[in-house]
Length: 466
Image (cartoon, rainbow, N blue to C red; front, side, top):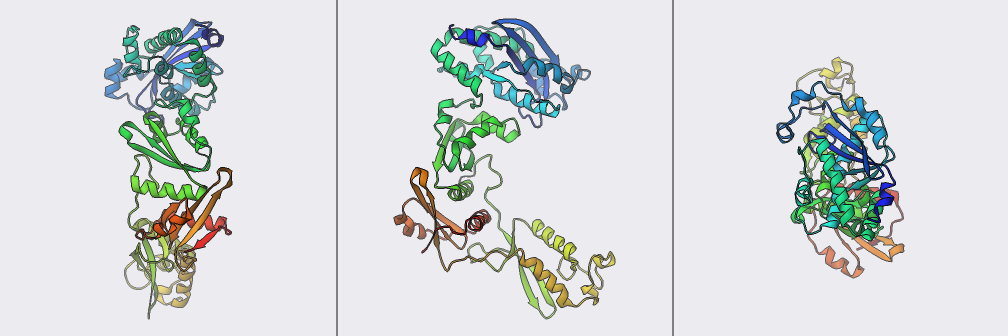
């Protein structure tokens, strides 16, 4: 145990946290225990039952044997936060599957207005090194295999005692050189997902691209992009306490794959296309879109009137007024313009009836509906509002390839597009003709915004007109 003196030279806080569920943003802690360890000896034990902000689920009550009524008169986390912070701050916090406990603690301390910093040592990660062939590295399974007795299960204090006994066995069984390396790595940066290794995270390249997170049975969990893949991937696990989704991903991820790109444009286009094609579990904003809606201005003898139509996804765009994901979103925009420009909802086709509209009675309409304003003036304001929302016309007569280069890695890509539609990305200009033969894709609002934003930010982008 030559590796243990450096560890035992530090003050350890062996913890166990019991919560109402698995999601720090909606569940909460109802019991917590801390063993203070000095020089390899437990010098103090502290535990609290807490009144949670949500009811104790029946399943949790059944496992722990604690009735919800027992928690009614207990303190809240905020009442014990300062005392708990003193036990943890600046020390090495030891726990099993510590990421979950850490997520709840960080969330609860933040709500209490405290910032607590500590190093982390996870016995689950050490157990995977010590006994890689075990089918289950959960606390219950390890206690059974290592003959660690508990007088209760799923209670904070006996589980914290079990973690301490597990740590002692791990320190005795892992070879000293391996143990020192594992402990040093965890204390330096405890941001490694449960089923991955620090070596796997370090293997992610520091360059632009798209990353794919996989769970059990190669289930695709999440697709993301970044200008620095390694930095972005690691940030997922450093911040997994902030919301339910990121914590779920961190707990389920089994594998990471990456696809480098020549720059940010390629990463954005590839991410948007792959999310729509593969439909990962935890991507939301870029999932397959419904049919887009747009306003088309119809002119008659009476004047100009907007008409909401489904976008022809395979026709050229440029004369459309706005792109909307739902009828409600489109109508909300039109009503907002009516309020801002004092337009008549009746003349816009949103409100029925004859004579003065309701907004006119509230002085919110200039009165084109009842002859108090010339229709031409009303329509001029409508056209001015719509002009701001006009879909940008495709700047070229046909398809183009936007060139993106990464000099640092001697890597270039050609992004083939036509009428704002993303066709393909190729690494060799000789493949452009083959990319052009693909069927024209449906119009994608995400690709439209990505390419338009890039061209506005980088007006001197290298373009090959095809």
